[in-house]
Length: 120
Image 1 (cartoon, one colour):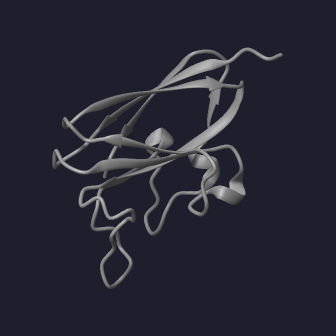
Image 2 (image 1 turned 90 degrees about the horizontal axis):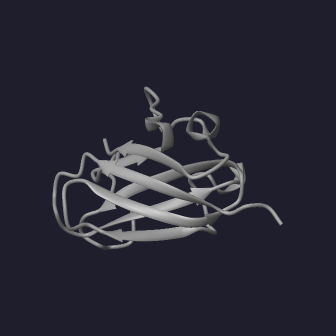
């Protein structure tokens, strides 16, 4: 049996202290920005949050996250499908237009790991 590790996620860039953060921990590229088998929510009660995810196997992961400030269960966008709510990706991956590639978001878990995500 492989060891199970802890992932500590430090989240900054929260502008409004209300709603929730909706996050997805991804191991399979087919789930990136689509369905999510490891979805979790974090209540927003401060402008910076820490969250712990336990029981991770060693491997490569990516995280997508957005601030669902109105708690409607979706990332609100404008007419041009540009997000109106803050969002972020592991490695703080960015792209000029549209979301970053899955590979830019990947990070490795070999032991207990801490990552930081700044919402944009």
